[in-house]
Length: 91
Image (tube, rainbow, N blue to C red; front, top):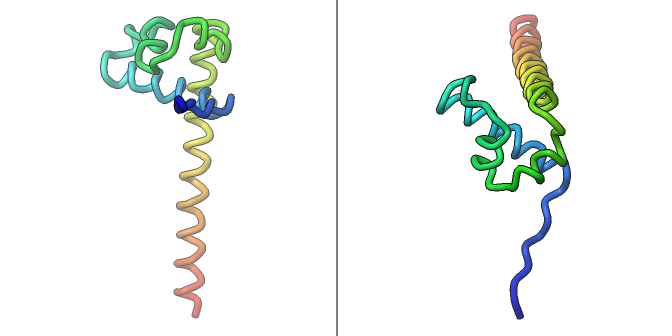
């Protein structure tokens, strides 16, 4: 019996595409950020990329949203640590 690949969820695929886009920028610079480069980096067809991001503006918007979410998550972690320190010092 042939093994079948478990399909990725839509959000997991979207996250993988955003990571691939970030890797293109990190490795080659923002001028190399093309839909073709991202699809190649992610190992998907350009059509697969376009399913999640219909154009480069949508992809870049997704990258900005991801950056904001990462920043907010990190700010929350740092805030939690600071609250913990305040409680320890108050004791």
